[in-house]
Image 1: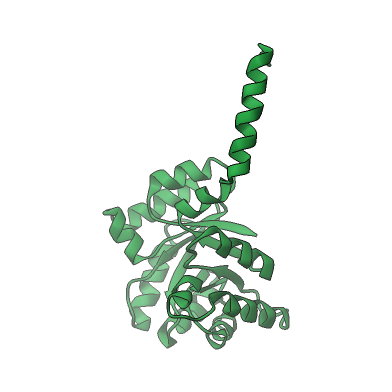
Image 2 (image 1 turned 45 degrees about the vertical axis):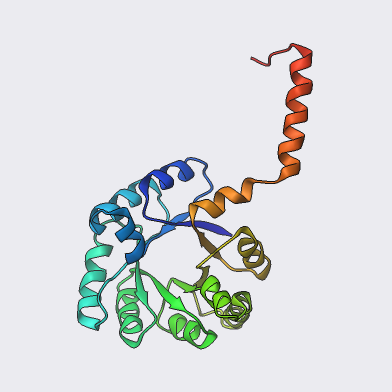
Amino acid sequence: MKFFIDTAEVADIRELAATGLVDGVTTNPSLIAKSGRKILDVVAEICDIVPGPISAEVAATDFDTMLAEGRKLAALRPNVAVKVPLTPAGLRTCKTLSDDGVKVNVTLCFSANQAILAAKAGASFISPFVGRLDDIGQDGMELINDIVAIYREYPSFRTEVLVASIRHPMHVTDAARLGADVVTMPPSVLRQMYAHPLTEKGLAAFTADWAKTGQSIL
């Protein structure tokens, strides 16, 4: 499973990328707005930190402008994945860019039917939003289960299932259990994945016992 970080904060990306555990980054207009910086500058800088796919989202909603924005974003760096919404115009943009060899991440997916359309349009990634489904009383992971099962039936589909709107570490565990290709999570969730009270307790005991020996490995 690939781990993407869902943020536009360069400091967090640098810190987490240094662990060697980060395979890519996803951004969106809301995250760019929080950063307070220009989108082209932010995307280019992130691409230079993480060599994997960096999702940069178009802001337009009509096909012609979406396509122009997508091409401009894709020209920034070879590892840009243009992010488009799951709308008729977005899927048309996805098909055009995909045919040109550009990676495309189709976002705001909330049904298996939408995921099928994205795969037909040649998307590199489909981003189902599990947390937002959970928020309205639906089971977000059931959607992941459906998409993974459907894609497995059609080897011609090359679209990776990128689980988005991750709210907590159990979302990551459940996505892995279901066979999703990628999870994208806020930096806070990745940091939470390290934590377990028994790990902390065990380390404290080992450290205390080692100190009693008076030894040094170096």
